[in-house]
Structure formats: structure tokens, C-alpha cells
Image 1 (spheres, one colour):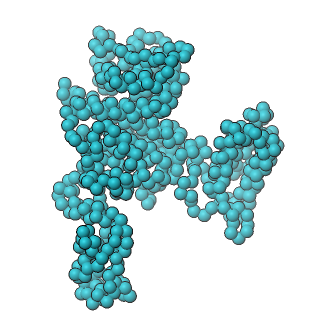
Image 2 (image 1 turned 45 degrees about the vertical axis):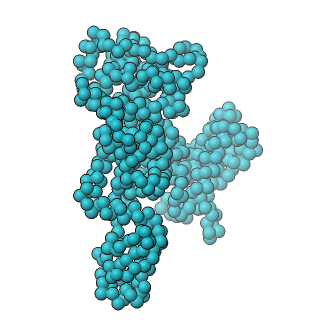
Image 3 (image 1 turned 90 degrees about the vertical axis):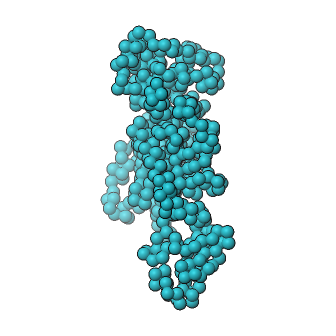
Length: 520
């Protein structure tokens, strides 16, 4: 069984001298002074639950490894440098309680293995919960409900984004390479036997040697590539049928078929296969990162990779309650439910939520009518004419009354059509509609009662002041970008989800440092 970590609390004389030299790196001082509070008995017990009987060389205590993991994130250190820093940097040695060590106390393999264990057992979430608990205790937090803000920012993926030709060729090249390893033969020889020599070239497009501005030439090149892929699959079925049902060939063949099916369709004119018109919603864009997707932050701003969603506490400035990474094509509303559920596990139910309008259709909003929601309403412009805001909506009687005093029944999610005759005779007609053969139409949103409340709040100073509080989430996202950058460190959603949360824990340590210094 792994051991509990019990480093000394009091500073030695040497540590006191070191502490005087780390003023510009406050986290070294923070971790050394408060490591026993960050990793208290309850937290260490949860870390130890992930460990069974020891095997081989005794491992470092999980709390010590977790602290090294936080420092790695805080200072942007790659895996291979962590062992060297434990042997060469006295600041790291002071924090990890190994002052005087002249050989690494952590191996590069241990750094990797602990990260994988942390992902599996949720150590990142545990550290967020612990920092939140300490912040609430320090701040004297006694609120019965949580006031939070939620938003997202783009996270550019680490995988290479490629077009159809390169996706198919690269997927096929991985299959050929695995087949060559299985047979113990050179890759070039296996590619020749399988009938797919294109994948041995440094560039499939250079090997095809086409006039890429000519659509007919591109079509012919696509048929050549797909013909060689078909030859590869036939050869595999004949020579390595059993191996194709086992890793890694099984997964690689599935990837090859996936990128082919998502991008290729039959030519309706009978000209054979062609690249699909338009883009599949869940199109895979990278061979080496299967979770990356095309995404949009707005109609004009596109990106490739992920979205990272963050929840900020509005009552403890700077404190972040949780985070979640999703593929870039996943709507914001789908991320809100699981993220808020994790945040509420920290002790307080959600009472007030400040969000972007993209989250308005999320489960926490739909299922909680008592939740105080602060968001911008959907715009209700009508090209300078009377907008929906000028109409009186009665949600008890489910009626809508126009400025001309005509009342009509309404249904959520439907369009209300006012009588053409009444509109034609109305003196406000020219200011209301340009239609000549029908009356004014008003679309009623599925969440129209909520939208009406948001519009009403926007018209009051108190409502506008409440909306300005969302600056906390903008600052939170900017702080996360400052700590970890805007490009993914890892390939795959799960690892990047972990990376976001451990950086949230680091952010919260900075917040804790400020809180503790304020009360010292």
C-alpha cells in the first residue's frame, strides 16, 4: 500500500533563506507553507484509495506526486524535466521535502504513470474540491446557494488537421505500417504487395502529381487513391484476416473506414466516388487526435479542436469551481448539465447562474424554474419596425396583444399570425409589417417567458448591473489561457479535460495565496 505523506510544517533555517529568494514565484512559498493543509488527512485518504499493494520499488506518497503534478502544470514543465528539477532546483526540493537530493527522486515514468492514475481516479477534480473548500473556509463563506458564471473558450487541438486526401492516405499508412510490423517486413515491401504504393511517399499529393486546380484531375486522383485503399483491404483479408480483428489493426482499419465514409459519396451522375458536398457535423479532422472537431465561436470565427467550459464563483473573486472540455462541435447547452452537476457536489445548490445565451437551452435552465438566470436575451429587432418587445405577452392567458390592441392566442415554439384584414386597416401597419397579403407574424420562442424576463431585466439599472458581474468569467477564462495557453497540450478529450482541471486547481492556489495573505 502507498504511504501517507507527512512532511514537516515548520521551516528549517535553510528553507527560511530559500523562502526569502522566491518572492517573485509566490507558488513555491505557498506550496511549502500550506502543503499540509492542501493535502490533509481526508484528501490523502482519497488519494490512497487508488493504490493497491506495492510492487517493486517503493513509490513516492501519492500526495507528494500530486504536488509535483501541480507544480508541473503551474510552471509549464515537460515530463522529462520534472526528475531533473527534483535533483537540481532547490525550490522544487524545498516544496517536495527532498532538500539536498543529488539524484532525481521522481522518474519520468512515474510522472506519466501518476498522470494516468490521476485521470482514471479523478485526482484533478479532488484537488479542485479541496482548493474550493479551503477558499470557503478562509473567506468565511456561508452562502446557502451558489452564485456562478459559466462560459467557454476555444482550445486549439494538438493533432494535425488534414483534408480528405491526406486523412485517407495517413490512415492507410498506419495500417500498412502495422501490417509490416506484424509480418516483420519493410513498409515499402508490404505497401507494394498490398497494392498501395502511394502511402510510402512523403506526400500523397506530390505522389499523385496532379493539376489540383482541375476538378477532373482531382476526381481521377481520388479514384486512384480509393482504388489502392480497396486493394489494401482485399490484401489484408487474404493475408492477415485474424490480425485484422485484433489491436492495433482493428482500430486502424476502423479509422480508415470512418474517414472514407464521412468524406466520400457516390457521384449522382454515375461518375464513381467523389468528395461529399458540405461537411459532416461530426466529421473527424485529425488521424492522431480522434476527438478534435471543427467548431465556431461565432459565425465568422472558426477553430479546430475543443471548447473548454469554466464555472467561476461570483462571491470569491478569481475562484473557479469547475471545468469541462468538449469537442468543438458540441453545443454549449450540452456541456452545462454535467459541469454544473459536478460543481454542486461541492456543497451548495446552484441559486444564480450568469451565462452566455448559448447555454440558455441547457438542462440546468430548463429543469429549474426557480433558478435566477442572468443572460442577454435573444435580439428582437424587426428592421426598424415595431419589434416583439412592443407586443404585450400574457403567459397566464397565453395571449399576445399587438400595439393596435388586437389580441391573439399563442403557443410556445409557434408563430402567431394576426388577421390580414385587421392589419391592413390598422394605422400602425406601415410601422409594423411590409406584408401585403397577410398580417403581421410573430414567432414565440420555446422559452419565451424566460426571454421576456431577460428583456425586462435588461431595461433596469439593477438588471444591467447584474449582467456586468459576468466579467468574472471573462477574467477566469483569460487566467486559464494565461496559465495553460490556448493550444491543447495533449491529444484526446480525456487528457485535455484533466489538463484543464489541474490548471484550475493551480489557479485556485493563487487565489488561496491571496486570501491567506489578506488575513495574515
